[in-house]
Image 1 (cartoon, rainbow over the protein chains, first blue to last red):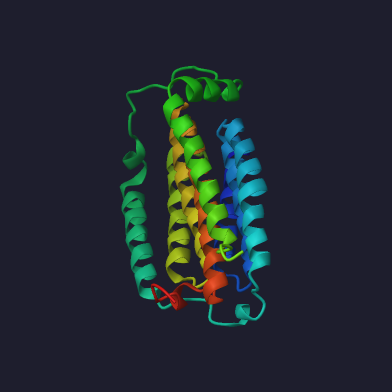
Image 2: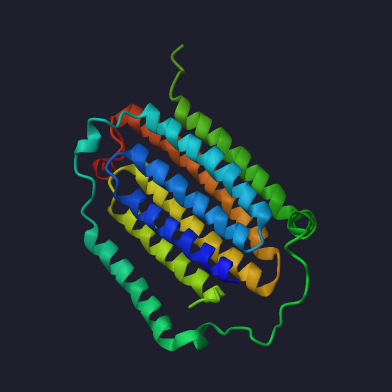
Length: 175
Length: 102
């Protein structure tokens, strides 16, 4: 239990620090690498909560797929001269307002103490051994209860793939 | 403080959501804006998995898989739009895209 706490705080510190570095770095490549750090921390949190399949999906899809796509696009778009320019747009006050509202929410729940989170106390955790057969359980639910959303997700991916290719290809109708 | 509860995960995900929101609103580079959106989606995923663990119900993890699918589709389409934009306007900054056609 103590090890769990230590790991949680380590991963939380990793995630928050990496996220802060992601949105403040001047060079976009550094931002991408810090974002990879944050995603690794999130995968660690999944492992800590017994979601091993999701941790694998996070590493393979997010870090291996999405972040490599980001890095490819960064390489396609020249950033060196532009990285010296102004980093932030003029929306600081809206951002300050949004974050202040969320901070007020956090402060409210902190002032309520631990009782604010004692939701659904009457539902005791059934003793299903989710930890040992996580992938099997996820697969069974995904292919039985969520079969239609699963197929719709594949159609969504197909549409997104075609759209990305069409938009990135540009006009070549002259030839 | 020491037994890590679901509330800890909720606070962490709220903090991550705040950072992502600030990134979306303040950065000029569209690539960093897309990365901040990934941060926001990860905050949502942390919430879903935390409640899935709390209720011992695997549905939250299945929802997380769908969120990751959407994140992949969004990143692909967003970066395709970015490449088309850069080909036409030679910029990757959000505040310089202020016309509808050229």
